[in-house]
Length: 149
Picture 1 (tube, rainbow, N blue to C red):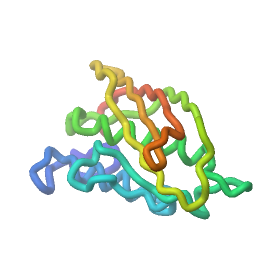
Picture 2 (cartoon, rainbow, N blue to C red):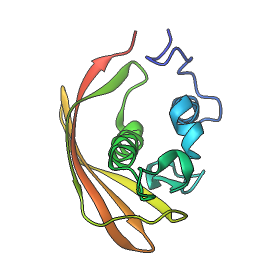
Picture 3 (cartoon, one colour):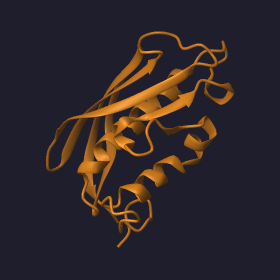
Picture 4 (tube, one colour):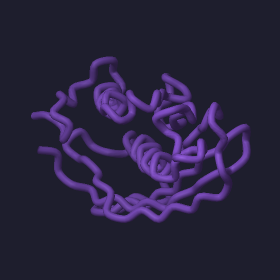
């Protein structure tokens, strides 16, 4: 059986299938284009980092709000992954983001998610984006838990 990304959930390195699922997230074309990488390769729930460079900037040279919002969702998913069964996947059905400060071109952005509560059918998460330790954006994310196909 494969997970929702079409990958075999069998552990490649003894960590309950986490590595293939994390790699599937990193391999998404948008994430590659934006230069997304794990903040700590040994701890994917520790979040992601990416540079606020060309493809992530708006027309005035600041980090585009849609980019950081999308990556808040990604970080929340990475935080949730360790608690998902191999036959379980999570899809976003609600996301509310707050953009608190502008992010200058060239900044390194760190995004980390946290599981607030995981039930049988729904998970509630929070994610925060920081630059040099300053909070620049946050999101409340709700994901529906579904069976992987």
